[in-house]
Image 1 (cartoon, rainbow, N blue to C red):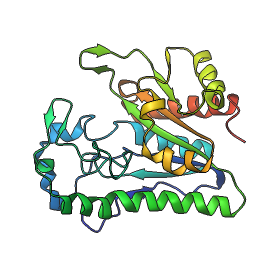
Image 2 (cartoon, rainbow, N blue to C red; image 1 turned 180 degrees about the horizontal axis):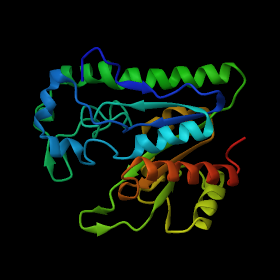
Image 3 (tube, one colour; image 1 turned 60 degrees about the horizontal axis):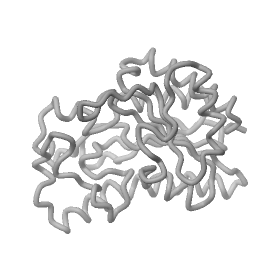
Length: 247
């Protein structure tokens, strides 16, 4: 990744202004200046570096809904955009069972530089997109797309998809029910509890403004290719519609 490449991407502008799609862990690129953080190719392809399949689903959903998608092309190991600037897990020296040599003994100056060069521009882009919609009289629904591992520390995670919520289940209950109707286990605040781990992005850009929002986690072994990504995008769009989150 070239140092001049923006850390965020706009997949398409879309014409539907009342929906904004977000993909925090879309890519696993590491700026050349960081020398791959000392990781090998296999490590950079793993979930520790990004959310495999999430971007493909988000892009397909962008077409289905005709909505803008903003994504983070940089590996979460550079600086996790879904963590607050002062969060202890913003830059991990160890993720799961892997050490990240380039993040060990990080100086405060380097931490601040990564915030300035990578983390902040992504959130500035989201901020601009949200503010523009509010200024035009729209109340946008923010939809965050993530993926998760089917097994974590030896424990199987049976859910095909999970819906995370923080303040109240009620706004997303219809979507949960619609996904259940489509078949397969659906996580209700699983595989993570959104009440304690929804993440920085929706808290900053949606919850702080009282905007409608939803975070969806798709099991990554179910989205190995474009065909699967498009099928899941269609299911999600239908569930959002039937769950009355789309206007």
